[in-house]
Image (cartoon, rainbow over the protein chains, first blue to last red):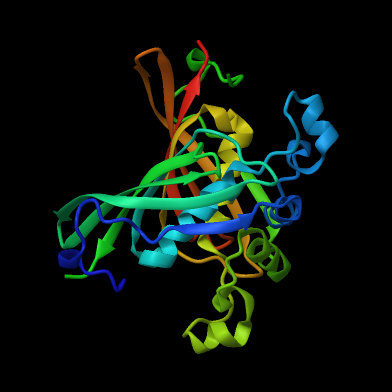
Length: 140
Length: 140
């Protein structure tokens, strides 16, 4: 059970945001090794340029994971009832990514007290990379 | 646009599944570095045991990313309209994780032709670690 109390959380409350330092090519290489996804557009600048990009881009799943990390750090992963995302943009080495969110809905479903949050990851230019929502199970 | 053609895809069609080799502690360490999430339950066996676990566990977001990778490899990440997951279990070093899915619904929404897929990651004992759904934009 999370330490989140349903009655203490209100619509429009922000979630604790999470800013990561500069996204580096090394992190993207690490993610490629961790995931086994070594698509050259993530790994190799000239291959990315041949594919019509400005240079390498981060794996979408890496960015989605950062957003999920913000939610699970706050609520505990076992309390995430659903987590839903849409991919809106790309993250590149040198970007500074911030995950943030706010509570948009509260409801009771069976025995569960649920808060629903809008969440997003944006870069230093306030461009949205991933947005989505999460439903979190709370205590009384 | 994906190379997926709406009219060629039918309900109950399986997605191309993706099996990763043995999940290793090294991969989990790599993910910790890539994500910046160095919670000791992922990193350090004795810390995980002190927390009441059998040993280290993989980040939930690492497993979610593997599932997303299967979907994006198949459909192209730009065609994932939504991707939704629930966390059901944990993955540990030594597990063999398989991502799979099937088409469960087809519908037209505005100009978009959408197929909806049920997806999951299971281990070598057929225990579900993550399940969820994805809505994919298709060509005619």
